[in-house]
Amino acid sequence: MRVLVVEDERRLAANVARGMRENADYAVDVAHDGEDGLFMAEANSYDLIILDLMIPALPGLEVVRRLRSAGQHTPVLVLTARDEKEWVVKLLNAGADDYLTKPFDLGELIARAKALIRRGKGHAAPVLRVADLELNTVDRTVRRAGRRVTLTAMEFRVLEYLVHRPRAVVSKAELLEHLYDYNWEKFSNVIEVYISGLRRKLENGAAQPLIHTLRGQGYILRD
Image (tube, rainbow, N blue to C red; front, side, top):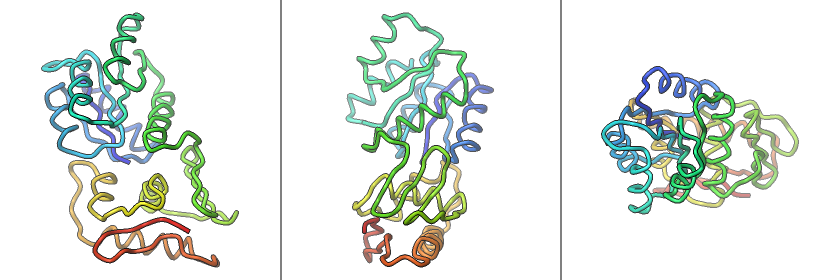
């Protein structure tokens, strides 16, 4: 999953980005004002936007309004030092999905982020299932037919994205957009390597394959 953090307090932005990378294994981009944040949100594909309310150049509330006016449905979690009811109402009416009042606990932020990403993709429960595959988004474990499957961090990220989009064709370009941040180095066959590893581990002793390749289109996860 790929997250955009828009926060002008650089130390806080760095701490949030580091926490998301280390504890949720998400790819994270950072912007420090509203104009840059809006540009990045419009130019890239994100699974979640974490947005400070009081940022320079363009206030967070206006960023939310412009994203929603442009038809952007990416979940938005707003960070704010204001907890007055009128501001909460304005945020939610503008299209924000959730908010946290500063100061906040990083663990709570990550939990809310995971929940928003799941709901944004149509999943409420933390354990996602496709056929006999179970993926736990909280403790980051995978089981197939009850058997524990040990994956590398990147294999888990690829599988997590596919599980969020079961029975849909996912192109290699889409996977690259959602698994790597703005600074990733482009290796043409990296997705094929992870898919190969996933197939080997998931199909070990299984009756049916789960990940299928549609030549020239991408990959599909189905029974």
